[in-house]
Image (tube, rainbow, N blue to C red; front, side):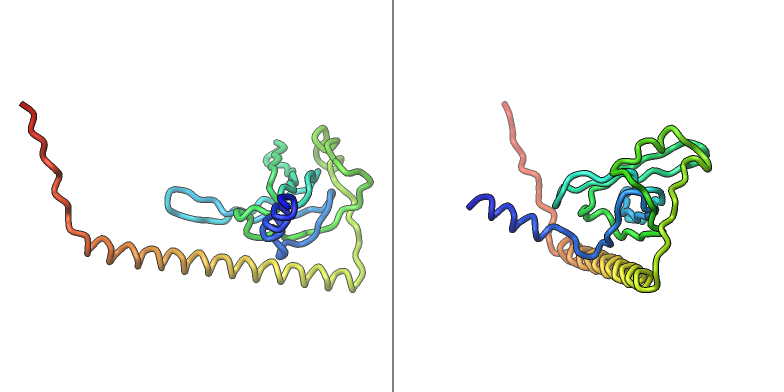
Length: 171
């Protein structure tokens, strides 16, 4: 009984709008970052060097070279902070984990590209379109929520009178 309940709850949290990718693919992950009261999106593009877990707790690690320094970042696949994931190119690899890329730089750190046929390319473009639409929907929903919150907060502040502080006298 409890196992079925857990499976039902986790099934609702899995995001169907994200494209399928695997280890070796070059991907662009757009992440929502919250600073003070502002939201912004930041893209992180690199090679997916490994994936682990399954279901809701599935994670993947992306590695990129930034100014000669390797930077790795691990993301939860079904996180609400991920706005969209775009597969830039598919890599041809024979391993599940590409940790050997950590010791390489430059041309030695490249992953061979898997060339796609016309049908696969169309499917990839369709996935990109779906992902972008989901990101736009998400941004519109955030803007609407902010507007509704601001509108609800404004009248509530005007209507509530300032309460007087209770005075207590001690002798």
